[in-house]
Length: 282
Image (cartoon, rainbow, N blue to C red; front, side, top):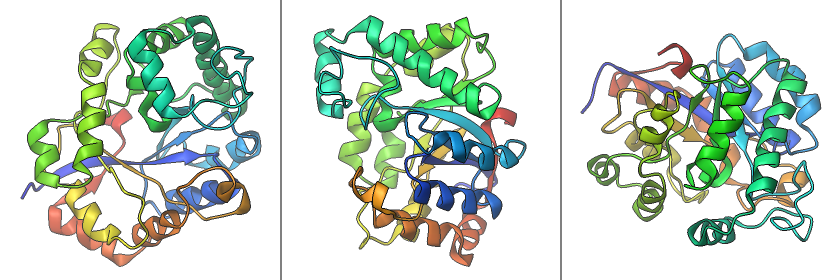
């Protein structure tokens, strides 16, 4: 069992709905999170940004690049012909065929970064992606270019959603999903470093989003075989009508939040000899 290590705990999907944002804010207020990533495409983001500013000195605040849920910020007649962003399966397939509309996606990436800065008052500390779109090979350089053009090279860190095979097998959580993402993410850390961007080293938090699972038990396993700059993703929040109408991940969110706010969370960290940290200061 690894002991005496720190890790970053990031709540994804801030801004997805008011209920999700309220749950994440509660986790930040309690000191149970050290990062959150923001969906700037969602209508509640401008208002939610004001409350989030209070935590910018205690947590990394990043962009959750979204190319697969809801409505884009820009006109995307090829990529989002129906007016809504396509499902992740279609995006991965198009990436494999090298048929993603580059100009449209470049413009949308830039618009989402700018929407973060406009409402939060500064650039993001890091960038990750909804359903890990940032790791797709055609999208990587477009993201790097957008960040570099805004002077964020060497400043913003990026999420590498892959990890070492022995670590994934040792954790034994959602192995099929973790392996699939690791395959798509191969070479991401190398590509990011070549462009001057740091990444996490070690990644866990894959979930079935099944409310009947023992999330506390799963979380304990997320801390097995940590990397040197380990990152754990989570999806806490409260359920509201907007979330129900938009995303299939609902009832598991309050269960995650309940665990994070409980004494069991602290006991889990103590047992593993783990402590929370920000990657921007690691």
